Image 1 (tube, rainbow, N blue to C red):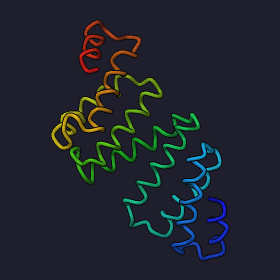
Image 2: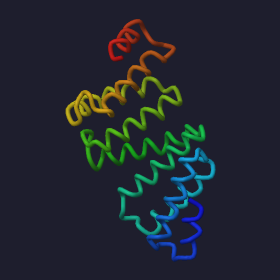
Image 3: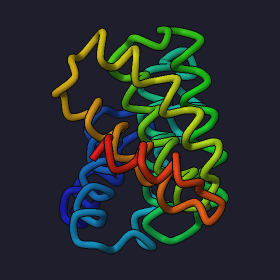
Length: 173
């Protein structure tokens, strides 16, 4: 991580080795459970992408997602939710609901909503994504199963859950 970054730090900002060094450092920090140190590196990389490669929407979304995940790791769920909503919205607009990465972003958004105990929104989103996930990926695909899990959690963890909600959650699991 740090050795890689220090090796390429003196190169121009847009040099491929330099930004790969940033990614390597951030990845090593996240893997080492040092999210507080990883966050400024991830944010700097995102800023670099926006400045120098503003046309590269795919990599910007990936970098935003990494920042959002890191914020969640740091229990900064409100900030993570804003980012996850934006990413999901952009993926939907560009690729539609049946795209695997859109479904993945929807799963990330469901998680962010659940972390803030926004159960009704979690249920609505999971129910919207599940038919597309089943159609595109199959009922036994990991993302489909993850969405089922998010839906079941939203149904059973909601303090306002009805008996029908609890029965539905049990059926899902």
